[in-house]
Image (cartoon, rainbow, N blue to C red; front, side):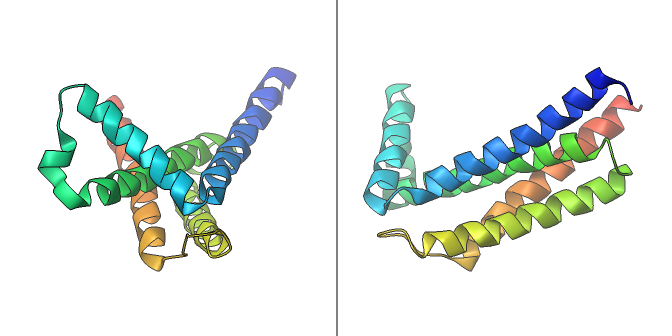
Length: 148
């Protein structure tokens, strides 16, 4: 294996770890700070002329937070696929990526038990897992489209 390819491979794994740290940091925020971030996103969407609050009502904050879960773990799975495809057959890459995503989501929810105002919820693990499954589905879709 040449040095350039080796450096690229290492960089991909570093990106996975950096993204895991980012997820950990978001999960470390106490509830009031996390709610503030969701509120900021809601205000940003509203400032675009999309009154998301009138559409979703009392579920606005909840919806934004859950979309955040899906997005975080979608990105994690994409990064895992990118890193792992150098070492494994693609079907195994998908399985390993989903497994790592699931285990990291579990550890993230356990971590949140110890954060003020936060709680670990298995339903959030399932939402995170959905983000991972969605990533695999989209990667497979693009791969099939590309191979036509």
